[in-house]
Each structure stands twice: as structure tokens, then as C-alpha cells.
Length: 406
Image 1 (cartoon, rainbow, N blue to C red):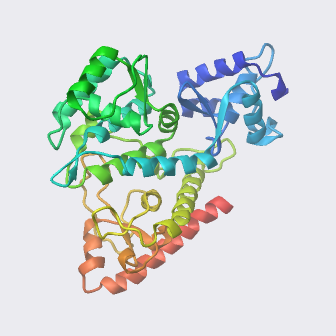
Image 2 (spheres, rainbow, N blue to C red):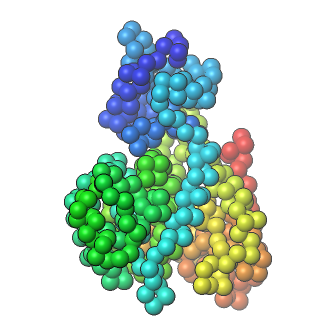
Image 3 (tube, helix red, strand yellow):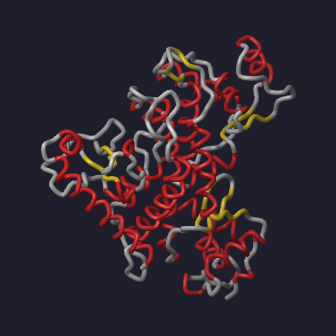
């Protein structure tokens, strides 16, 4: 058996099987773990490259599938062979940096403002596109379909009375390099000048959709989707309740990775807790990203605010670590209710205040229910609790990282 025998046709058949079965069933059938680094990207969707290569070998005439033990060269060898056959394989270690850059771009969109508050046209368009990527729907749509879908969303869910016209936000996102427009014969106008902009879209009727690389990232990574949604909500929907909008775009039960990974869900063929290993690896990735941001974020302030810039990666790491439960060992009862998006009511808090110089890192942060957060912040026993929580944060942090090193 040799990977060198693979053909593009066999790989495409394995991809079709993967699509038909779904990721979990496909990996169980062939005995592979989820890819933690090398991912095959095909038609805007992401696939576990080593598993695809192993399954593809079974689609060759007279050959059997390869199992993990048959890969003497490891995942990097499989990735190289797939690239040699003309397939795109990405290194998720580099993808971390791409996600960070994307989040920076989303947090700095040039949006119009009314009474100092950002308009929601562009964020609504992006949330709609995230939902489509999550469901694996076509990236590019005719303008008539885009106009109809987004017009209805803006009319019903424009929480700041946004006009129900998608031409302006789509043009703005195109200028920002986040939206692709094709099939037009005239240059795309700038996202202002109402009559000219509307006239251009009526004449050109362009096909369009989210940038291909962004779509592939969001379509294949629940963590990336969660990060993007969190950034959009935290930046543009302050003091608003976006639950109905999230439901409308199919993100009301966003399968964020902390929810998936914090619930043990089975084992790999060798008895190792696969979910635990994935949780530890994802926690390590987010922690490293937060640590790398420290020299950049320290002392920075959010626009129009005296509040320090916070790391979204550090916050996601803490929520992942918490398993959706208050991390105070003395908690006497968190709220039974959940948010309209189905998430637990938790607040990520810095044990040592960020404004006072505390580090913005997961080993100095905890997830608390509102009751415990109030005790830590305003209670008579707050200082005593602070010491307990710092110990909890450090010990849980170290335990998860040992899961990566071990």
C-alpha cells in the first residue's frame, strides 16, 4: 500500500463520501482523529487531510483504505501528496494568524453612525454569510437572491432602523476586501451616493458572496465562526439583543467549539479521550494567541472609550475551559436560564483587574455566574474569593496544558 498511488479521482470520491456521511461518521469509519493542523480545502469546504488520503486509497481498484498506523510519514506527508495532486491543503498553524487578522478587520469596519452608535447594515450582511458558510450553502449567489434575502433581514432585524437595502453594505464590504462581486462590466462604485449606487446594482445585477478564503475558514471551523460572531456582536450590537437575528440567519444555536469539546463524546480506536485531547489543543491554541497579543494590546484603548482592549481569544479560552459552568468552587447556584442564543449566563472576569495592570491571559481569568461575579466585585468576602479564583484559574490552565504536552 502506498500513498504515491493516489489519484485525483480517488480523492474526489473520498470527499464525496465525507460529504455524504458527515465528518464524525467518516472519521469513525476509517479510524482517524480530527485534523489539528493540515486541512484540505475543496469548493470552500474543509476536510481532514490525512483521513481523506487514507480513505481515497480504498477508492483505488483492488486497494484497501489506509489506517492511521499506515502513515509512516505522518500528516505532513499526506498533505504534500494531496498538494502534488493539485488539491489545496492549508496549515492551520498559519490559519491562526489569518483568523486574528480577520477579527481585526471586522472590528474596524467603516460603518456609518447615528447618535454615536454604529449602523448594523454590514454586520447583518456578515452574520447572514456566516450562517450560510456554517450550513455549507453556495458562497456565490445571484444578486436577485442576495437582495431578497438581505432586504428581508434588514427590514425585520435592523435594530437601529437600518434601511432594507443591501447595496450599500455589500459595496462597502467589497471595498473592504471581504465580499466578492462578479459578472459586472462597470467598476463597483464607492458605498455612498445613494442614487448612483442603487442604479449600478440595478444595471449590473452582480453575482456575489463572501471572500473565498474567509468563507472556507468559516465553513470549516466552528471556533472561527464563534470568534467572528462574538466580534461582530461585541463591537456593533452593544446594548442590543440580537437573539432574533441570530435565529433568522441560522446561528441561534451556534455550534461553538467550547460547547462541543467540553462535553465528552466518545473515544478514538485506541481508547484515548478524543474530545479531551481536542479541548486541550484548542485551549492551547487560544492561550498562545492571547499571549502573543499581550505586547500589542497592553495600554491600548477601545475607540471612543477609556476601556482597555481585551483579547477575544483569551475570553474564548476561558469559556472553553469552564465547560459552560461557573468556575467558582464556592458557587451556591448559577441561574438555570440561558441566553436567547442558548448559551449559559456566564461572565468572563479578570481576577486581577485589567484596568489595574492585570494580565489579559486565561490563567488570570475565570468564568463566573452573575451571582459569583457580584460577590467577587462588591462582596465583603471579595478579596478572599479573589485569591481562590486565581488559584482555580492557574490550576485549571496548567491541567489543560499538561493534556497538550502529555
